[in-house]
Length: 326
Image (cartoon, rainbow, N blue to C red; front, top):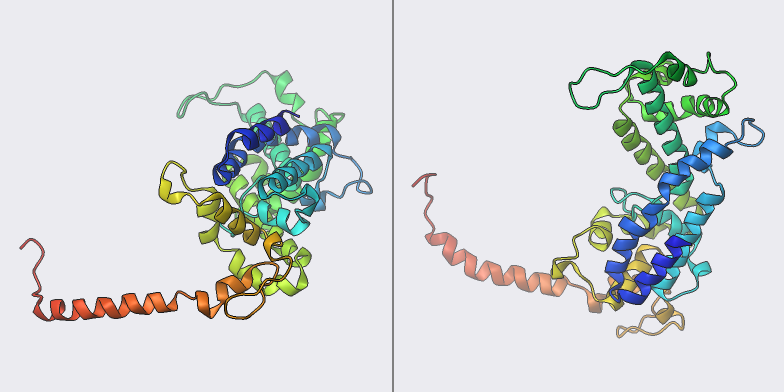
């Protein structure tokens, strides 16, 4: 409710849609992910018939569903369409990392299990080996009674440890470096793997997985457009560049069209198949607008190239090479 209230406040007080998306992406929706690990801690089933730990990236609890609904509702309001019109493949593009050409929003289906497992791994390691307040400080050892709480052999009745032990081998497979042999990854993950390095590897794996799922859920007749849409060069300017520089801002109407194309959503203005000035009919996704020969930038490019050649040739003929320092 609090996140929805803040999203409504963004819509009411910030007319610039690109700024609104950036604030939602970096601030508003990030109030929820830390709770996702707690959802797994309390609700993960202990039997394979109810949840297979090998499918840990498909966790979908009540809170995870709530996060997805918040993202869907926000995007619908941002783009001026019903929330249900924000399709499953558009949400997949939101979850794909910026490096892989998505929008890099929180992915609750994978984030929940990752947060729980990494938190438990770090807590178990500290309970066993102690923890340091500052870099280079001597490790502070915990009382044996506290250490025993994080040892499944000495605390076999702990449901939380049983949940952690079920997930750990499957998470460790992708969290450890490739140089670690697969049979040794569970132990290496618990004792040696850095939580930050593990998180980076797991995020990369999950983003790659989302790209694969996107190709399975996107409209079949649009699959050949996905490589062009999933370009990081079109992701960073849209959601990650500083808004304090006016040159980084798009007008709201242009940004709306850019976001619709990025998410592979139909553009309402093209619903009635208007005609381009070249005589062709605009497709519902706006692909024609970027490939129309009448809108091509080739002519402007050639004029700049030829004009540059005219004034550079005389200058280069009279130029003299100067040694560094002269």
